[in-house]
Image (cartoon, rainbow, N blue to C red):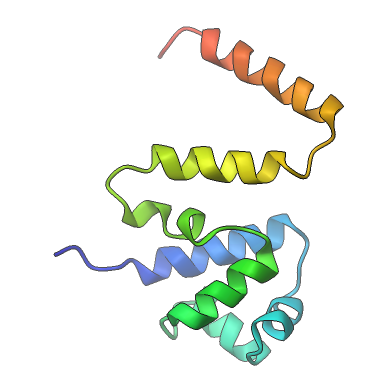
Amino acid sequence: MKEINFPRIGAKIREIRLSKGLTQEYVANIADVNTSHISNIENNHVKISLPTLVHVCNALDTTIDYILADEYDQTSSVLEQEILHELHSCTDRTKKQILEIVRILRDLPSE
């Protein structure tokens, strides 16, 4: 059985938190844990528990599936769901721009 990659999970949590401009303190408050616990998760000093993972995902406005995507054998549906999740907060204008970008990227020749 494949081991869970806790270092990657912590790194992904940090990556998402930073991309959204959130502090460890903010995430810790929402997750009802100490700021040092979030730091320890991100730096792989502790393994995140399932309840804390749920709360952290809520604080980051992301899905558990997206955080754990690298743990699955088939990640494409996870990525599609996360894209849809992010699209919900976009304006119609932004959605149209994203659609055009996707079409352009899809039509590029494969490397």
